[in-house]
Image (tube, rainbow, N blue to C red; front, side, top):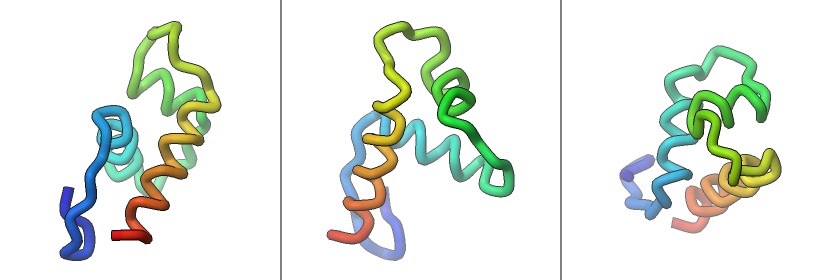
Length: 64
């Protein structure tokens, strides 16, 4: 993905989360809402994993 003319590498999950956040940029989103809309009813996903993915996206954006 190219952000601010810098190429960053995202996992599939990070890309899906970032895409969902961008599409809903003016909407307050809870972790549960992100989980449901990005991962559906997948039981192996924990609410903390959303926070971990978002932190990874933020770090990746700053480092690149």
